[in-house]
Image (cartoon, rainbow over all chains, first blue to last red; front, side, top):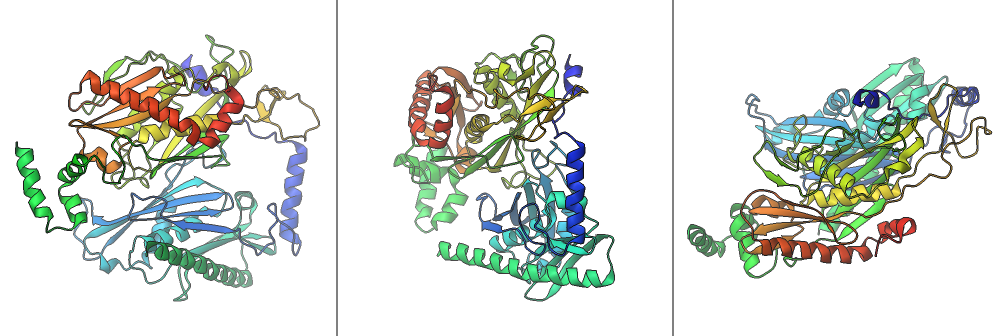
Length: 260
Length: 339
C-alpha cells in the first residue's frame, strides 16, 4: 500500500496544449527579433525588476540581509568571524565559507536541489576578492544563503544580498559587490531575466562588480554570443550594478541611522 | 549552597563589570538576579509571552503559506499540493502524509530526552517537515541538521493529525482515483526560542491560507491545472466547489520554561539555553488538552503542570484578538468552532 502511495504522487502541471506552446514560441520570437517588446511583467528590455533590500532579518546572526526582486526572495545570514573547524589546517588569513540552499517550495516542482553546490562555489568566488581576509586570521566567516522563492536571476541576487549581509556584520571589505545578469535572445539583450526568460534564453552573462573600485570579481558567460554583444552586455551589467550598489548603500545608511 | 556562594561572589564582581560581559560570563546568575525581581532580561514579566504577527501568502510558489513572527523567532510555513492515488482503506480521503504504523505513545529520543506524548497517534507521514537551515542560528551548520529539527517535525505532525483540525475528506478529488497530498514544510528563519509554538501557529495559518487549484482530468487519467477561464471547457473542472479547506478545532501551544520555582512563558533562545527544563502544552479551540510534553530535565510538581496549563489557556484567549488576520481567515470558514 505504501509503495502505491509513494509512486503515485505528482504535481499537476498546466496542460501542455498546442495553443500554449504556440503562444510561448510567439513570445520568444518577439523577444529575439523586435527592437522593444513589453516583457511578461511589463518591463522593457533594459529595465531591472524593482529591488527591495533590507538588513537584519535574522537577529541570531552577526549580520543578515533580505532581498526581493519580483518573485525571487533570498535571505543571507553571516556568522563570525568564528573559530575554524578543528580539521582545518592553520591559516594566516581568514576563511570564507559559503553555502546556498533552496527551500523545498522555492521551485515549481517540489524539492529540486535543496543544497546547491554550484551556486555555493560561485558565491564564494564572487565574494572572495572583495573581503579583506587578512583582517580575521585563523578564523572563518560563514555566509549562508536560503532562497525562499526562485523567480529568476537567483545567483546575482544572492551575491548582492550576501555582500549587504557581510557589510551588516561589519566584515571588512574593499567594496560592496553587486551582481546583475543578462539574457541573450537573438539580437536582443534582456537584463535581470525571470525564470521563464532564463528557460528560453540563447545565452546568459553574469557580472559581479565592485562599483567604487571599478573592478569585476566574477564574470560568467554561457551560450551563443558575438564579440560586440559581449562588450555591450558587460557595460549594461556594470551600469546596473552601480545603480544597485547605491540602493545597498542607502540601506546601510538607514540601518546605521536607526542604530544611533 | 554552592550555587548561592557563586551567586553572591559573582554579585560582588558584578559591581565592577559591564552588564553585557556579566550576561555572557555568568548567564545563570544574570537570569536568577532578574528572576528575584520578577522580571526577565528582555523586560517581560515571567508569565508574559512575546507578541505575534502573522502574514499570509508570503511565498507565491506555494499553494498556501504564512510567515509568523513570535518576538524575534521567525517561521515560514508553506504547503504544496500534489496528486496521489488514495489508499484502499480510505478512498475518499486526501492526506497530509502517507499513513503507516502506529507510533508508541512514549518514546525515548536518541539523545536521552524522555517525551511524554499524551496524544494517541495513529498516523505517520513523510510530508510534514520542519527545517532549520543554517541561516537561522549560529549552532546549525550546513550538512549537519540540528538535532531538535526532526523532533519538532514529528511532534508537529502528530498534533496536526490528532487534533482533528483537518477533514481529510476535503482533500479528495475523485473518490478512489485521485486525491491531494499536502506537503507542509516549515522553515525556521530566525531561531530565538519557543520554536515549536511558532511552527504550530505558522502551520495552522498556512492551512487557512491554502487555496486548492482548479483541476481537470485529461484523457490519460492524469490531473492537470486549469486557468480561470481559458481552455473553453474541453475538460470538465473537477473541483469548482472545493477551493478552500475548513480548518476546525485549531491547536494552540505554549512553551513554558521551568526554572527552580519560576515559570517563564515563551522563553527566548538565551533563556532556553540556561533553564532546567521546559514544558509544552497544546490546547484545542475548546481548551481541551491535545498534548503535554515535558522535556526531561528536573522534576516538576503537578501544581506546576496545572499552572502551565492555565497560562496556556490565558494566552489562547488573548491571541484570538491579536491574530486578527488569522482570526478573520478562520472566522469566515469555521465561525462555529471558535467560541
